[in-house]
Image 1 (cartoon, one colour):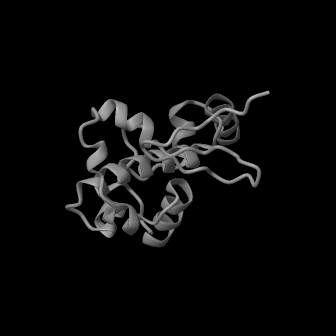
Image 2 (cartoon, rainbow, N blue to C red):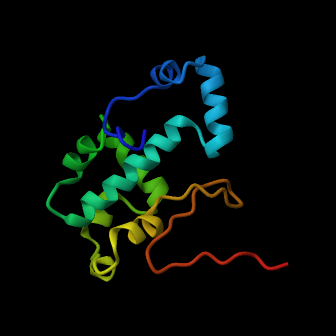
Length: 136
């Protein structure tokens, strides 16, 4: 899924490749990664979309299709949910402060996060923002 994120992947095909039933694969995947296969795949796609949008040479629609999404509306909704701003706003925002950061480090800090907060929603993460653990 990490390598072929732009390909049309579905749970039954992934389960067959792992020699498991669809239900067992989905449960095992969630137990191992803490999210469903679909959510994991969309997180990878959004992660790659952020990198393409930072470049600024592709439109949001081109990025949507380049990362394997087939619906601009679904892509924009999921992007906004994970990142905290629309793809257009993210693309328009300056990204120079992260330009000097090596790609392997930037990937860690720009990875979309699925942290269940008090309302159960995702908490967006941006470079330069640190999460503080609650103190006892």
